[in-house]
Length: 275
Figure 1 (cartoon, rainbow, N blue to C red):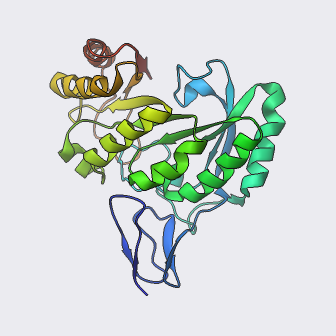
Figure 2 (cartoon, rainbow, N blue to C red):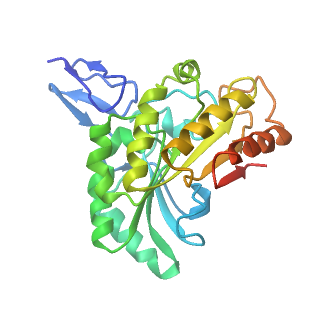
């Protein structure tokens, strides 16, 4: 029986056995399932600043975990080996939520704060995030999500009780740019506005030459963020050629700093990255 996945703005209509755009969700006997549940492709103990989070428990370590799949198609993705993969094209190990929570607790003695769901897009496997994050909280530890924010608000509501901080990609501030990446700006704006009410949120905008590097776009973006809360930190980061976008040079450092200065007219905390 055909069924519709309700997790994100794509609303993929899937026949039995068919995967969604994200390659992580599928129709199994008429039911939409999280096909990447507990399938871990990456696990690493990182500085929390690497997420990047600058204003949430700085100096801590965080156990970072990822699976496969993403519901966007960014041609500059730095984790494309897993984010653009499915179960047949990537290696993974099975790790139940209880095992992940226990691993996080084990590293507490060396400064681990908890778990960061990252590397691929965690929202396409939100059920695993919810189940594991609940157990991490039971251990008295924190949960972080690094996400593109491209999901329906009911998914966010299901996760908010267990997520302590997020870094959300705000890839630009033009609907047509989001369309090129396979996303929807209004979906992300709604996600950010809701998440920031009950969670520590930091935002990241990667500055891609000739795509989202004009001052007017940054003016609009920063003003919109400030209309929610000018205390929300914004990371303005430098693009480097990778994956399917090797047709242009790295963003000029001076351009990144100029756009960061533009954002500082509206926001109290602006950070420059990759420079």
